[in-house]
Structures are given as C-alpha cells and as structure tokens.
Picture (tube, rainbow, N blue to C red):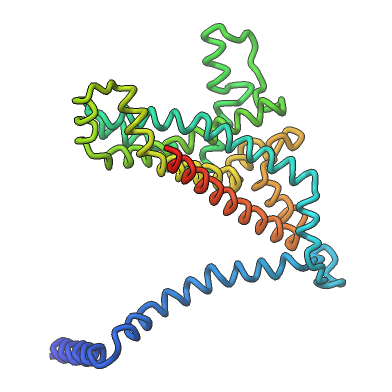
Length: 315
C-alpha cells in the first residue's frame, strides 16, 4: 500500500514538473538546468584561477608569518622573467618538447600507418600499444628507474650481454645524458597517444581518394605525400600542442626518476615550479610562474595554429 502511494506521489510530481516546463520559456528552463554544473565549474575552476592570480601579486611571507602578506604588484612576474634558473628550466622543457616532437611524430605516424592495415591480432596489438600511455607518471618513473639502474638495470644488462659495454654505466649521473634519457622516457609515454590520434585521422580519410589516385598512377609515396600527410596536418597540430603542454607540465616522471638532478640537469619548468611552491614555500612567486607557463602555452598554441594555416594557404 505504501509503495503504491509513493509511486502515485512521484507520478503527480512528474506531471507538475512537466506542466511547469511547458508553461515557462525553454531558455529559462535550460539555464536553470545548467546552473548546478555552472556553480561546480566556477567553484572548482574559476575561483582557484582567480585566487592564484591574486596570490601572484603578493609575497605571502610563509616563512615569516609575523610579517604577513605584502602586496608586491608585478615583482613576482619580473623576477620569474629575469631569473636565469627559470630560463634554464624552460630551456630543458623545450628540449624535451623538441625531442619528443622530432622523434614522437615520425614514430607515431609510422605506427599508425602499420596499425591501419589489416593483419592478424591487430586489435591485440592496438591494446598493447596504449599501455605506456595509461601507466601513471609515478609508475613510469619507477619503471625507468629500474631500467636505468647502474647496478642491476635492464639497460645495462642488455648492453653487457650484447658486448656493447664492458662495465655497467651509471646512466643518470652525467647531466646531459640524464636529460636525454628522461626525455626518451617521456617520449615513450606519449607516443601511444599520438599514434591513436593519427590512427583516428587515417580512418577518417575516404578510401575513394586513394583509389582515384591509384588509378591516376600515383605510387605509395605519392599517395602519402599528397593525400595522407596533408590531410593529417590538423592531427599533427594537435600532437604538437599536446606534446608541448606535456613538456611544460612534466613533473611526476622527473620527481620519481631523478628528483631534478644531477646538479639540476633535469629540473624542467614543472619541477622548478614545484620546488618554488612546496620546497621554498614561495607561493606568490610560484603562482606568477604558473600564469607565465599558461600564457606561454597559449602563445605557442596560437603560433602552431597560425603556421599550419599559412602552410595550408601556400599548398
């Protein structure tokens, strides 16, 4: 009996809601439905952004709380722009981005071309391919730490068994080599994502275009050069943007694998930001640096997009 009454009350409530929706402007109804999610977006995204912008204009004096927050204006931004440590860290991040783009895009495009062709167990191979991408950054760091380990690492063991080295090498103790190896580990993690994007782009190209080109006598290289590659330029732009953002925000892999060493050789801009905020407790300076990184990322994204548009117009 009670269940019947509850069901009847629900039906009455539903009818009232439908009548209310029919009586009012659909735009008002849509706005009211969006309000709850809008409040969440404002609370979880825009408020922290605004708060960090305000903090970037202050020196919070966390290490000297008796002084209290002091308004410093653009001093934190000027300090970040003129700091040689920031320039060095940004250079390392750009090095990782350049290496990841220079190696990652050809490799991922090659993988996508292979995976786009039918062969046995293709679905299984595609599933295996995405494993490096879905592994968390901290786990990636632990994995590559075992591979690069100077005493029992897999890399030393392999090269020793092949006779390439006579003694085990401490791979991460030499600054330039350590930065290169971290960049290679990061590229390994991002190649699957770029491959999947290229694969999706390849599958969206109509097969009739290739058939028409083949009828006209175009070979495999001509079809790739004049059809495949131009039509994949938007995907290439997306990969450029995502890889640049990944390099500028890289932290967890460096934190676990090298801790920014040796001698700050792998201290990329993301790790430097962490060090400023949570090691030196310079929250205002770190907030200013975070905003500069975000603006740089937006600027590079616009530059990539503009260069792509110029290339399309010329072609």
